Image (cartoon, rainbow, N blue to C red; front, side, top):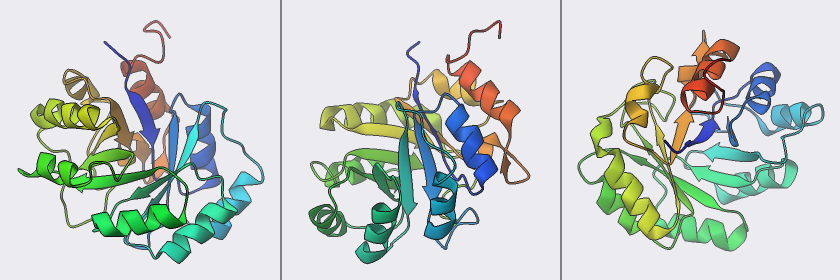
Length: 218
């Protein structure tokens, strides 16, 4: 089994961020959207990064929901953001405008339904990665999964486009084995590595172990 890329998202305290950085995750996510219960302000994140640094192999993903380009610019200018994740209703034109103004990779979240592949195709040549998430009333971090039998189709489409594809929504230590049978390229987890809305080191360790980053005897 190929090890998937890991993205640990929704870090909303210095403690969360430290645990994520100490983990095997290659991507660390911070949410700047007011729609999220894991929202972080730019100034809060600035304070954290005065005391902590990502590993050389890690990248910081800033998550935004229908945010003005001016706000994203401010975040990118003040924080070591490597990737911009658009998790709202951003159109192709919105992403093109964003990329014209900010020279960073942009990922787009797609809410899974029967038209997911068509939606992915609409962004071909525009974005640098997809997050396929469960469609709920919330903007991410819902802890609800979708039918993972469709994962190979999404992975195939992303591979055809030459971009990343992360699967999100309701992934936990007790069900990640089932997801891994569909060989996702990447896994994006927020609530599944939390206890009472805080990152849990044991759940992080279990995810890393099951994803093949920690030897089975550890």
